[in-house]
Length: 383
Image 1 (tube, rainbow, N blue to C red):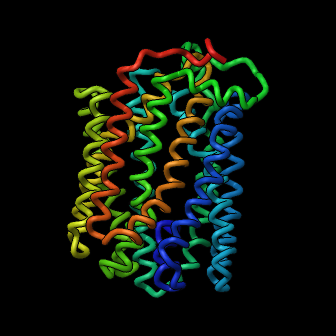
Image 2: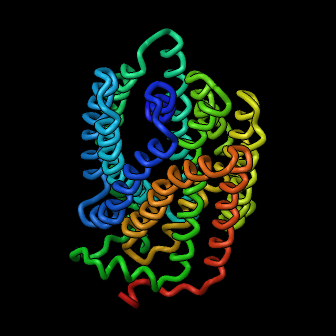
Image 3: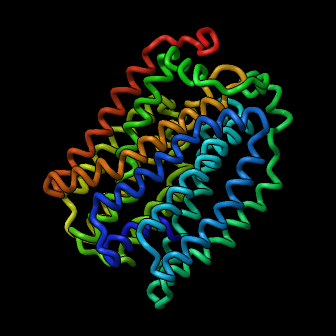
């Protein structure tokens, strides 16, 4: 409901440059990336739910603070600092949630399980901007939407009390068995380099999320400055993306079963590259929605295949840690993405810039394909 529109607010109502807006989200995502591995390791020891609950309750406070900052016209520095804190809190939710899904499903169920998770996420992702669009059209100040988001987030946190830390039946499976408690060490982090398929997978994930991040900051800025879309029209981008995921994710799950996780992941990377490159051909509201539809079709193939691959690469009892490393690569890519996108928009004419950004999808395809062809060396043998 609120965060995808923040870049538009900074660009149009505060006159913030593309570099400054990109820098805020880069620092926010970098702060979150730094905590992803810690969150994954910690969730393997104390369970998934406690971390997710703490992050959710603290994000309620963060949303209220952001609403207040916008209402009183606080400095861009203060808004940026609150965005950074939001990034840190996100690190203790997203990878832990992925590990929880893996706990609750065995390997051959995980594409479907992650598809259902994405279905739920995107019901909110489509409803949020739609509600924001109606509210803004009715003259409600943007800052008030943050105050609406806080109680919704609180309800979501309360819902976590009904989710078990692990499913007792699934806990018998070897790949979800908990690992023995041990202290976190930098050597543990460095040991991942010996797992060559996983390192290729992480590199591809980083490159992919550099491209994926363009949806949240670069596209919003491009829509505001180049296409001259209104704030309400920008909400349509995210509403359409969410609605299409809701409509297509389950049929895509069936297609993934036919193609296989690997082929779906590779095909999704190329689809992403092509769809983002087509952003340079957009001339207004309708054409940008068509390009977003192309991005979404690739997304419903790629995302659950990507998430379901992580547990299959993890050694026994290390799903949380590997999910944390996946989250680290994801947030690092999302951190670099806005700054890279802003730099490309500043240095290259806006329309050709999208072709250059689309190449990150091609590079992700190369890394994923190389990793799938590389023999695996389990990280425990080298730690």
